[in-house]
Image (cartoon, rainbow, N blue to C red; front, top):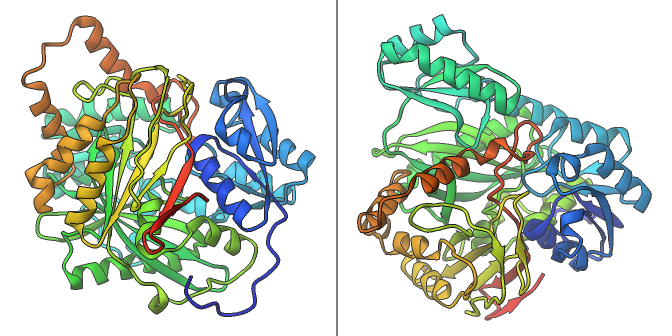
Length: 512
């Protein structure tokens, strides 16, 4: 790690991880390396989960449904108090961006390893976040900088020109978003967007934004302490997506010229400083074909894809989060942060690669990639059962290379050796994406993976009525289970797992 500024503070003696699976295990690993005792919480369905086995202590917090366990604020606070945990790390999803949870931790005298209540409140409303970003000088797509009524929405759409997007102010996961191509479509689009937003987020507020055709999705990782120090940890390109969910992420992005990249970093840090943000966060941008970028939102938590950044910087972002929460300043300045090589991550889901239909089942055997420049974050093991209650992400496979071509080659070979014989999975789709000409040339967009799925389906038989219903159910699955933020229900087709880190400079794998 780059040079420290001053003597480090005493870290926490015990941390409770308010999450499950992969991210819980990943946090536990860092805590143990730092000499911090850990407390796992678990639902009845997760009694034999890996994070429960790895933690120093484990507390049952409720039945399988997330709303009664991993989203149960009172139960988690009680578990922390009973075990003497001084701090809580929320991971990502579940309560990680829930201001009520942060307030409950503060009221109980427990440190929340993440941003302040005030920062969460400022960024949770996407329309308000646009307003703050505009005040901080960030570029926005034309649209409203706040929630609007139907009359105002139509007026703004006519002003900026169709097509436009109607978006839920409290939105996420692609829910409550409608493309509108003409004034005639506006009333129905507004009604549907408001209805979905009310059902999913408890708020019917919407805003209007100009539709950007085939953009790239690029985000900047930031880290800030309580002493006014803030740095960026470079960018990640997350354009390979399906159903508005990321599948492949990489860093650096090959689409940004040096001057545009610098301006994006400056914009991200300007917002961080303007709102007084602390801890880890991600500023997300859409980038058009000419390289112009526009603020979309801020994720006020650790991202699923944070290992990509760790692989190119050599930094442990969870350690940084813990140290900042414990009152330490950032141990380095911007000029001390260096990027080495290229990293790329693929998310492995139990789903049909052609239909994107989720599958369930039991893993009879598992064989992970063993390449020295591959890291696997996963909580699966022989006998692991894919549960219907939570996101079903089985693994994240991250490859490092001296350049993009080598990183892609390493990831592709690693995925070929990843053995999951008893479960249908999306590795064939990921491999098709890695071999795709647009992706190889670095001109891929958020539409690329959809076109790959269509190509894979050209020779596939037509779906039956039962299968079409299942596809629709999977797409709307986010309405049926408790959410990652506590503000909306979460998809039952994500999950978490155990983490293996590979240090690209050590020449060998090291489990955290």
